[in-house]
Length: 279
Image 1 (cartoon, one colour):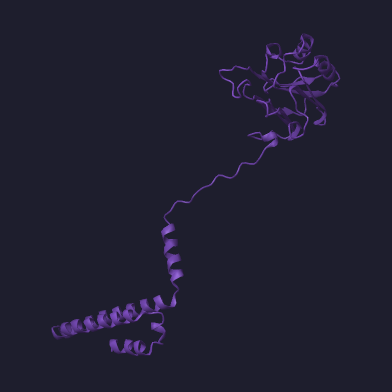
Image 2 (image 1 turned 135 degrees about the horizontal axis):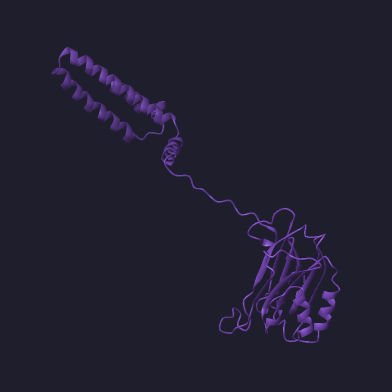
């Protein structure tokens, strides 16, 4: 009875159960059925009636499982089975946690300033090609990209009340006499202004003492220590006082043994947040 169920499908080659099956697969199934028949015949010949009932039930269960498995293999696409197995294997895997991309802050700060604060960042020049940069409230006031950065001392003046730049300029301290011109520029800054200063290349050779004294009066502690090609950054307020806990000044001297760019020292920078309610 089992063998007869497979023979027509094999001969016709059109039975739904055998679609996509190779002749070798069908022949193997017939062989297994033939061997099972001999095994059953031997067991029946040597068993009591009660054992035959149990055997019949076992055979019925085996045949049912066999046919259900076959129908399942024929009707369900292979891709579905493969996907299901892969999903089961993924259950035990730990989820991969990815950190979110950090949000860019004003002037490329690592952390944002509190609401109502101004963000600033002052970066000195490095070597011949890397010019100085002054950023205030995410706006580049002085930079190579804007075409207003140069050798010497770069200065940006910002209206504290509005947070907008009112004037920018650089003063060459290697060629020409620009120390007095720079003093006039600083003196003309109105009260209630922020002055952001930074060097590129040399800012000391033609810087005169009266100019140093003027910058010292703004709060600089390093202006008298300026040397040839020192990297220097400074922020000051005119007519009001900046908080003591913010970065106001930094200097790095040229040292051929330790310089990053040969005859030029590495860049330095200061950055921070200025409260908007100081005046």
